[in-house]
Amino acid sequence: MVLGILRPLIVVPADLVDRLRADEVTMVLMNELAHVRRCDNLWLLLQRLIRAILFFHPAVWLCGRMLRRESEQACDDLVVCATAARKPTRGASPWSPKVRPTRTLHQGESPW
Image (cartoon, rainbow, N blue to C red; front, side, top):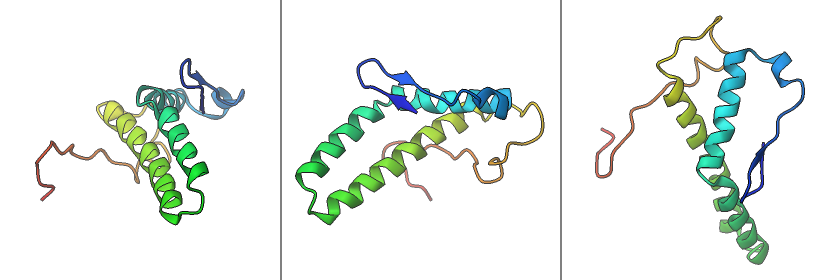
């Protein structure tokens, strides 16, 4: 979890290193650093301020949910693309069958 906007701080459980393998800890930290790099906390703060003002509008709630989901997906994609060339050190990770790197589309390029 990343706390703060101006001076972000990454907070992880104390026993994270004991529960996960070294490559999994690296991926978790890379994911959190991706959130810092993308300034996700700033965008989520802005979204929460707008939601506080327009709390009665259902589209604001829907957009907030979509923003959080897309933020997580974008950071996950960054980690997958950064680690795609690496081979797992010991067995496959539990989420490897579900997560595969995808081709990045450039502006104006069709997905088909």
